[in-house]
Length: 486
Image (cartoon, rainbow, N blue to C red; front, top):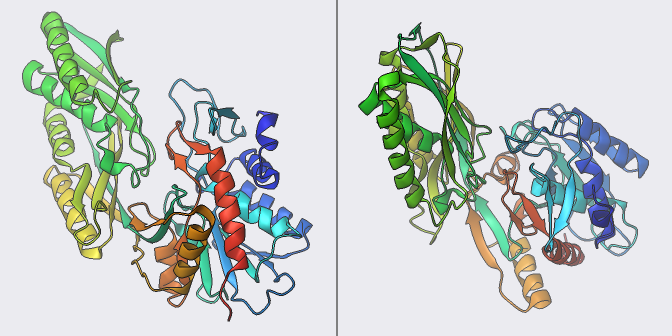
């Protein structure tokens, strides 16, 4: 890791960010980062505890002259999305993130950076450790498993917090103040398949789709970026329809909240069809590449001969699989009718695994409304059940309904205008913040979300802007001075 990152300003924030990035902290594997945070709180002599869901709470009393202000909850999540390029040998379970600086941004080498939400965590740690920042009483809440189920927020007990205002530090544009977010639900289709012997006079190919941007399945879903799983399925559909292609295995995508960047499949076809298939294949590639040429300049679709397998999927199951994936909605389903340019409902066809007789297809559906979420969930469930898959609905979490009349919103808006001489964007986001869940247990808690500029979250292109982080830090510390009185 570049020592230059530890020398960036504000030094406390960047050093704490470097510290936590040395600790593996994948969702559902937060034991080491939880222990790190507990040791941090206790070293400062602050009241520190861990609840049954493994959320960490660290309390700090108000500084001089601030005891009459409302108690605030500073909140960020400890886990990060673990994604890497297929070519990378990086081991997230044993290695710390390798960070570097380029053109005013901090990023990682071939992996996600963890700025989502590590910068928020580091900012809170900096405040807890400070002795010269004015602030009211603080409850610092570090939640777990935000990225793959929000089980930390869901497991938080109703009487655990006493604060009256929550500042969530998990927004990714420094000129935005978020006052609402979408809810979400996981939709998983599973099935089994039989195999049949590979016909004589056959040959095998590996199809690879890679080079896509990927990104956050909430914040980036409206951009029309390529989904490697859907692109692969178009190629399989053409081969199935025109060349009696037989599928051997298929693997694409990863986490539900990341737009799939890569997908691979092994197929078999008759040797006599090789030349005509290759010609047709690259004509399909040309058409797809032209569709995405302005968005996905690095899209690469490749076809390479490979070892001939002994068995392939039966054609009956293959047909159902390909048609159901084709029919499954991916991307924006509906725009919000009340808030301009806001995605209301979407689906990310995130992961497909077909191997060893097992099929699994994982989706993440998001929506601002429970009815919209249910409607799209029903549509996706119907597609896969028609193809004889078993569909499991899980991980359902509520959205955060926008409220424009809170005291804390007035504070943030006025502070921003005074500091930066411009009006911030006050809006809701299509990502899933924990505020919706926290608000269900704490209905009287005023909530707001903001943060520095982060790009490429949930992908190996993730990066955080250095000057924006400095702006965010100055903004946060000024907000703390202006928390309303009790």
